[in-house]
Image (cartoon, rainbow, N blue to C red):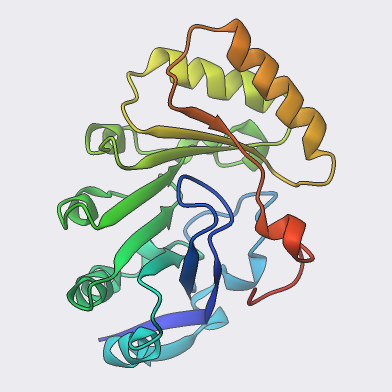
Amino acid sequence: MGLSVNEIFSSIQGEGIHSGLPTIFIRLAGCNLDCKWCDTKYSLKFSDGEEMEISTIIQKVKGSGITNICLTGGEPLFQKGSIDLVRGLLRLGSRIDIETNGSLDISEFVNLGSDVMISLDVKPPSSGEMNKFLGANLNFLRSTDQIKFIIADNVDMEFAFKFIEENSLRSNIILTPVDNCGGDKIVEKLIDMKRSKDLPPSIRVMIQTHKVIWDPKERGV
């Protein structure tokens, strides 16, 4: 079975609980959403990728010496063969972060075990895709997974904190600005809001470090 692959490259993880770890990124093409501020518009269509056999993808990862893999997109769960890719990577001894937009069922991937970490987005109003979230996914998340809110403005902040307050979230919670340009003000506001509310201690306010190290428009870094 083949998958449409947009790019494969090695870098460091730039966001979330594994930030800073050397990571191989496998970006699959195709997405079922179209967020207004998406920073990977170049991977939204299946035609934005090259058809590649799972065995070929695994060979590109094998022998790299990097055990942390990030499966991203696009939306990696949008391609049915992605679960077979994850199974193959697990057999290599990899540990895998799966970046998913929250609109598709994650249960099969959670069942693959503790070497798979789900990074589940909850899309805020600014994304234009807020109503696409699949609420049942919250039932499958573990303490080792993460829930991520990408914040563009005050409305998004209020949405995120209300969502956190209304749901008993047992996973790590990541709050990060859409763009690091001007993101310092958003980060300040997020920290102030976090201090003023009785919220889980697992909340992390973070920036996207890869956009600090490299130009945000640069690919393959």
